[in-house]
Image (cartoon, rainbow, N blue to C red; front, side, top):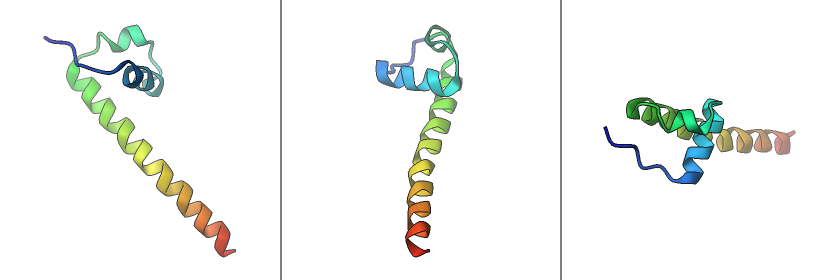
Length: 61
């Protein structure tokens, strides 16, 4: 099986998100990496919308 082409920056962020050492990340099966990468992207996409929603509510008060 070929290794999944990840940039160094993405690999470090994914390892921090999964709380595993970078060395373990590089030996994980590709389908798990893709699933965790999708989860990380989804959680990062939701964070800014929550922050802007809170800022809007604070302005209204």
